[in-house]
Length: 429
Image (tube, rainbow, N blue to C red; front, side, top):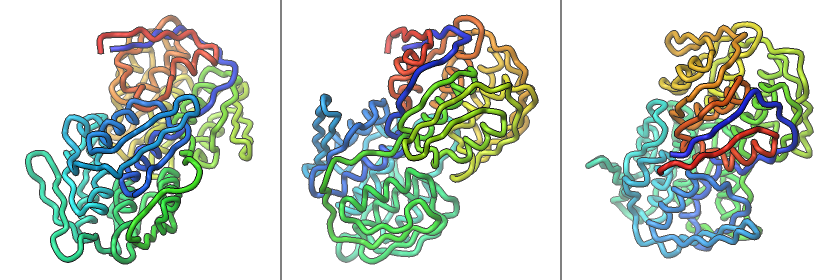
């Protein structure tokens, strides 16, 4: 397996451009299953998760053509020949389960393996299935697969009012897509409000759907008989988690860097936290640029993760890496996933002083991080270890970086442009 060799402490300088959002791209790519015409995208991120979803779509019968010179990707789901998402692909990425809604809505049937992905805790699909059942689907769980069918009358889901017991991002996305071809109107209450939800709604409307309120707590979808994509290639929003990671990299190394294609409005909670800690940021909302400036030292913080617009769980690990070098103690509480502290032992190996009590991490701060061989356990934990290596004294080895490649496009090359001494060492994959 590939690993990264990082020499620190690094002093960053230069510019970096944020890629399109992984968490927005995946549901949008599954939504192409709803279109009766080919869909073209501009500048999709080159990530392991995107490649996995491409394989899944191809297994279903879709054709995918890429024009690398112009950064265009065209997906045609007209020749769909299978309605089964197999275990070998879905097990590696739980976002694959999002094909359930589009397949059921368009074809009246779907068979999807129970999902896998990072081992950061339970992400129950019960919310998805209960809501689809309220729209007329018959759900059967057998042999590790979920089979959904429409039994009565015309093969269309029926619009309904659905209250989500938790504002699940995946359930909101699955239901939005399913509802676009349902008969009647669907109202999703207590919906997830992440920017990626709003982007999915924007994309669905580009295909002729009628979606209102995407990105708010109540989403209203008026079902249509068919959808087709038209107009210019679709451009997915910038990745707010990658954006936050590079922001923290600049702050953690007390460096001046310029980050392009960054939507600061999607990062209010992260930016507020960094400023409270003493970070100096220069933000241009119109040009989508943020510069990290030199600061006079960092204070600790008390942060609890929460659904958007709260502090994102996907930035918890990166923030924890930053708090290890703050001048005063910090407390970080994880409310979304019960097993998202797997980076703590690895950070402690590098000299951090972090104690776990329940779902809270108590960080002493004032640590002098030292280089060490560390092991990636999940996507965002991997990013935290890279950040720690940037600030650590000596040469660190960050192993099992296939997790990083799931969500960070060319992270080693981007850090090299920021003056980081970093090398990717190929392994036996």
